[in-house]
Amino acid sequence: MMRTNTINKPNDPCVPNPPNDTVQSLKWAPSQQGLLCAGSWNGSTSIWEVNSTGQSIAKLQITQSDPVLSVSWKSDCTSVFIGGTDNQVKIWDINSNQVRTVGTHQAPVREVLWCESINHLITGSWDGSVCFWDLRSPNPTANVQLGSRVFGMSLKYPLMVAILSDKKHAVWNLQYLQSGNTKPEIVPELNVKVQFKCVDCYSDGSGFAIGLIEGRCAMKKVNPSTFRTENDFTFKCHRDNSSQSAYSVNCISFNQTHGTFATGGSDSSVIFWDRFAKQCLKTFTGLDGPVTAVDFKQDGSLFAYATGYDWAKGSDFASSVPTKISYRMAFDDSKPKSQYK
Image (cartoon, rainbow, N blue to C red; front, top):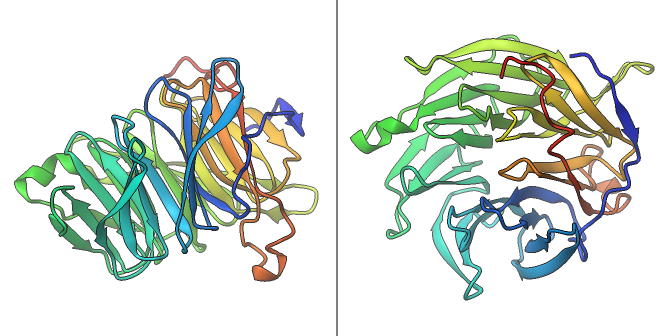
């Protein structure tokens, strides 16, 4: 995609008292409230509020002994679901500040997703399974074995997709869940030679984007009749053309209002993209470190991004990059240029 309109070292506000280790998951609450939740490798799950004047205050925080890999809001914003390396799936009631365990996996929980349409929590794990949970029961209503580790998941009902460690992706039509059909369509990526890093569904549920570790995104369409995956297009991003270096696409988030999307990379940059016109909308470079998590607010008005160490160089460099969570007004910057939306 063509890149233009670059801002170097944007002077964006940061939340107070960020975690002191990598932020792996960052999620705005699905409401008009400016509540932002982050899960970190230091074991903390934190919530801030960004008010109408753009100021942020720390609201709540809980800490566990093991890293947090994923957080997800319940639709009514009363609870946050948490998954991490302790293999447990937890729910945090933010009104009572109480945490209880929903269930467990046999390995770290890489992703937690709440689906209001089927009233289920869905979790993906490095144990190679995706589980569906009714919060009233300690056992999953379904346990789908995928045969390889889950590296990421996303859903836009009825579409749900998981990316796997063996360079395959699994696609579900969640409308079939009530009839007991939890089997996904598993698709190998024959032309991909490198590891998948992240995934997010298109805002209209017609497909999804996969980020790769070698500075590339693969865009996929889903046939609405068969739910079979078709190639949309691929493009290079987060690359240094002068040195021929390619950097990992660590995170992707689609703007639910505009249908555009953002990528965050190991090159310490965030890029807004128009998938309809296949071009860059805006690039933010020179950030304080690799971008480890990004998220658009539901109405597209705000965009949050976390910078910090992304572990690309191993544990020896872990203390070299401070962790920050920044945010900016994004409604105009993320508007599509095209008329195809």
